[in-house]
Structures are given as C-alpha cells and as structure tokens.
Image: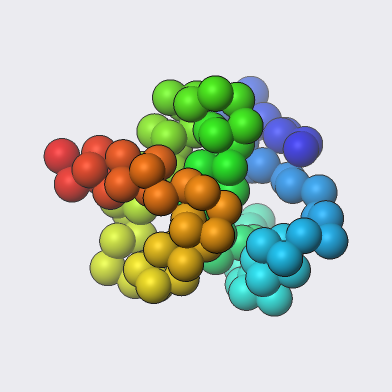
Length: 108
C-alpha cells in the first residue's frame, strides 16, 4: 500500500496493490471514476473500502484504527451502501463479526 499525505491539510489517500484474489477482482470491477484536482481517478466503491479495511484489521489482530476508519466510511455512506454485498463478502472472508462492530459504531 502507498499512502501519500498532503502535509498542509493532513489529507491522505490509500493506494492498494491489485492482486488476483476473488475479492480484488470484484473490487476492481466495481471501481468508480471521480475527478480530484482536475485529474480523473478510479477509486474503490465504499463497500469495498469497508471490506478492505476489515481485512487489514483482521490481519493485524483487530486494529482499532482500521475498524474506526471502516465505521467512518460506513456512517458517511450508509444511505447508499449495498448491504447485501457487504454481508456476502464479510461472510466469505470471515469478517462478519468485524462488520457488526462497524455497524454498531456507525450507529452511535
């Protein structure tokens, strides 16, 4: 992962390497195009960002930062999220318990 940081504002972006995993193929197929500072970029759909952060949390032994970040995305995007997609990938990747934590935090 590459994480450029704007030192003036503190804003950052995460760049993830694409693998040949089933989840990454799905995530890449669902990418969306946005314009940032006059440049067109592809970004992951919010559901895929949430799942990726939960994967990182699980891989690091329960990173509170990743769970908190996922909850923030969930809270901001809650009205447009594809809940069935989230549930399916959380189940497939054994992340259902972490997704429940995210939903609980986002509701608070």
